[in-house]
Amino acid sequence: MADCTETIYIQSATSLKDRADKIELIIAGLLDQQIAAVGNALTEEYQIDDGQVKIKTVYKSADAIAKAINDYERILQQLLNKLNGRGRVLRPWQGMM
Image (tube, rainbow, N blue to C red; front, side, top):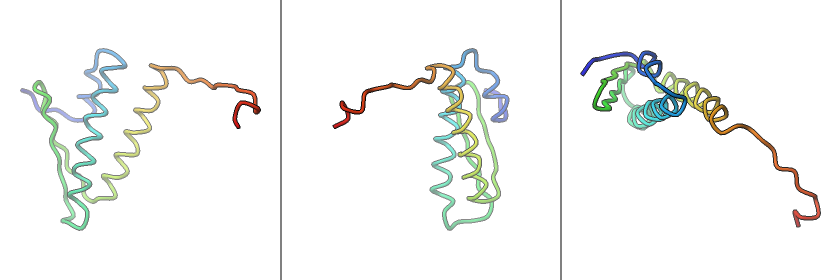
């Protein structure tokens, strides 16, 4: 198993779905670390091991983790919009009651 960064891990995806899945794994790892970081030491790290790749990243604070989560969620939403499309449903106002 090779060690790599989050960026290389995401860029190794072969499809938009695969890329979204990898970002979801990273977000899950970050959320776990954020929970552990609340009120703890200044330096936090997390690891993801999907069987093929190990990712190890160190963050300096819970705020840095929160920012990373927000950034990854924004990227994930963009990928999901590309996969599923964006649309609006127009309904008459009479049907809303």
